[in-house]
Amino acid sequence: MSQQLSQAAIIDGHVHLMSIRQAERLLEIRQCLGFGRMNLLSIVDPRRGNGNSTVLAAKALHPEAFYAFGGLDHAAVSNPANPVPLARQAQRLWQTGCDGIKMLETKPNTRRELNVPVDGPYYEEYFALVEEQKTPLLWHVADPEEFWDPRTTPWWAAKHNWGYGPSDVPKETLHAEVARVLDRHAGLKVIFAHFYFLSADIPRLVRFLLAYPNVSIDLALGVEMLLNLSKAPDQAREFFVQHQDRIVFGTDIADGLTVEHARIRTELIRRFIETDDTYAVPPDAEELLQTPGRIRGLALPGSVLKKIYADNFARTVGRNPRPLDRGRVIEECRRQASQASRLAGVPAEQTEAGQCIKALES
Ligand SMILES: [Zn+2]
Image (spheres, rainbow, N blue to C red):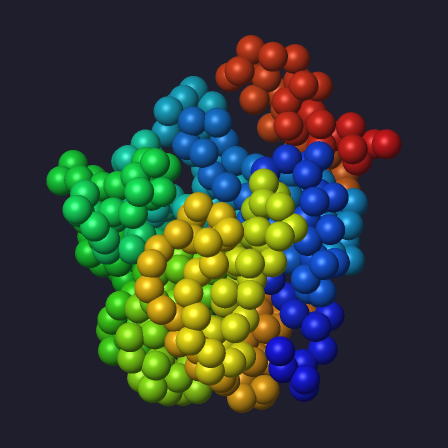
C-alpha cells in the first residue's frame, strides 16, 4: 500500500448502515481498515420511507466518524393524503445537518415500485432547490448492462431481484432522463455511484464527464467495474490520470458484513488502484462479489491516489461533516417512528427510528 498516503486520511464515500444497533460494527470496520471517515447513505424504500433516522443518529453519536446522506420519502406517491413535497424534504434534511442526499430511485427495481421518471414534474422543484442549496447528491443510476439479460445476469443479482426484463425501464432510458436533469440544472453537484455503470464504455464516460463538469463518479463495487477496466488497463490508467479530480473512493460496505468481508471488499479496490498486480476475487469474498475473471491493477501515482481517497470527496461534500441540529434530528426520528409505527402496526418505540431516539437519549 502507498507509503505517501496517511491511512487516517481516507474517506470511504459509500457506506450503508441499516440499523443503529450495528453502528459499532461499522466503527470496528473503520478502525480495522484505518479509514478516517465513512459516509453513511440512507436507502430509500418507496413503501416504507427511508433510513434517515439511522444515519442521522449515527452521525450525532459519532461525529468524528461519520458523514450522513439522507434519502427522500415517497409516501406521497402511494399515500397522497399526506404528501410532503420533495423540495421541502430536501430543505429539512439540509437544515438538520445532512451532508447530502442519496438517490436510489433510478435503480431499476426501485423504479419498478416507484414508477415516476426523474426528469418529470414530480422531481422538478426538488432538483432546482438542491442545485440552489448546493446539496451534494450521491446517485445510483441504472445497473450493469448484463442485468437486463437473463443469460448474463449473475446468480447473486437474480437472487436479489436485480434481473430485469422487457417490462422494466431500459438502462438507456435512465441515462437519458438523468442527462435531461443535468442539462436543466448544470450546477448540481453529483457523485454517480459505481462509475455510473459505464465502466464497459470508457469513451462514453469521458464524454459524460466533459459534458457535465460538476459531476464525479465513485469506485464502489460492482466487481464488473474492475473486470471491465482490466480488459484495457492502459486505457483505464490513462482515464484515471486524466480525470483524477472526478473519481471518489467508496466501498459499498454495509453493516451486515463481517470485518473480514469488509476487508476483502476494500482490498479488491485498493489493490486495483495502488498496485499493478493481476488477481481474482478470492473465494472467501462475500457472495455479491463472486464474478470470475482477472483484475489487473493500475499502479496509480501517490498524488492521484490522494485525490481519489480524500480530496475529491472533501471538495464536493466538505473537509469535515456539517454540524447537526440535534433537535431537528430527534424531530426527524419522531416523524419516522410514527409513520413506521402506522405502516407496520407496531409501537413507535419498537421501530428503527424509535430505537434511534432511545440511543440518542441514553
Ligand atoms: Zn450502495
